[in-house]
Image (cartoon, rainbow, N blue to C red):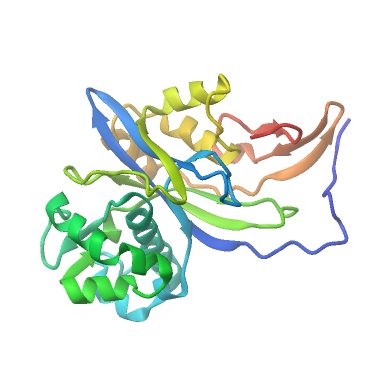
Length: 272
């Protein structure tokens, strides 16, 4: 026997904050790899965990003047576009990869153009003194929001004091840009095969939270960047909102099987 039981029935849920995450992908010696960073232990979300780069949307990410600088965005509403802008910005801030092109060009920016931009503007972006609109207008750029492919959509459970409404996007990594952790929010980084990251978590050598672990398992079904992108474009995407359930073994977090994940339930006690 079991029943559902929200931990604080009298307290209204906190509204989730919109957030975006990029899963940078590459093929390495015939195997699919994804870029991940380890959160600083003083960060208040996913402390010390291995995660994909990303973060919450900023008001400046919603700037209407950005739309002409985002090719292929004609079918996106303002929120969907802001999420993609946030994903591009957070990836630039957090690991130095800029998913952008010179205006009118087809290829993504090379390392030789990105590093001077990072040196000149990253600190001001982090401090809110500079925006993505400033970046594209001053340097003749377009944000390559058209290469971001929605992969997953997770909303933090209702009972959590901090909640996020997070979209995950797949992106083939720019070929010659170098991804690295920032040394502030993130203290380590790694290109890793999804199966290897999962094995590290199961062995207790890495902390990987429930949504990240499930998305690694989902990604592990693909053997190449091309296959992962194809699956993301063609398979249904179901929003995931974990709920709390009481079982004889104790409280568990559970997600809908319709989302297509392998891990549909985890214990509340001791969960990553």
